[in-house]
Length: 114
Length: 115
Image (tube, each protein chain N blue to C red):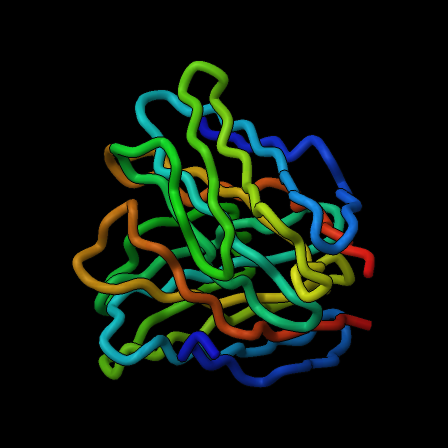
């Protein structure tokens, strides 16, 4: 079985400061990992994914994520937060063999203050 | 705009009723996924169709069913509705071939309220 943990319900950061949204996963075998963002009254938008290779993945809107196999983590980062980054962020995992459903974490609300 | 469309945007109905939610995937995408998002259960995978065939089932109740039509649009049918079925229902699509590493593109969702 696969699972994702997002340990923080909410992350608060000031505009211009770096941000980190944490994600750890559990999966048998190798994972495919994804980050999605959800703005109010909108569907989820894909930000980035890890398939294989370079542990640092760059995505949309200046976001990046670092895959750490030993710590089973895939934290989302951005060097300088914007107020417009305030949204709900979801980490998701899928096993890379056979069919496995995409399993989402519970989400982390990011609040960037001016 | 992801290119995935869902109708209706909002649906209010009573317990025991039946509703149909509709989804049109992005042009060229063959996979359609349905998800339920609620406060207590989070985002849960319900079912996937690929080119008209059911590909995988998740936590979908027997009262719920889905299908994908030859033009690739999909419908999710919810029957004998209960208060607990109130949720946001999302459709997502992804391109062919069907690969686990494909990102999914989500529609804006249908908010279902069961009174």
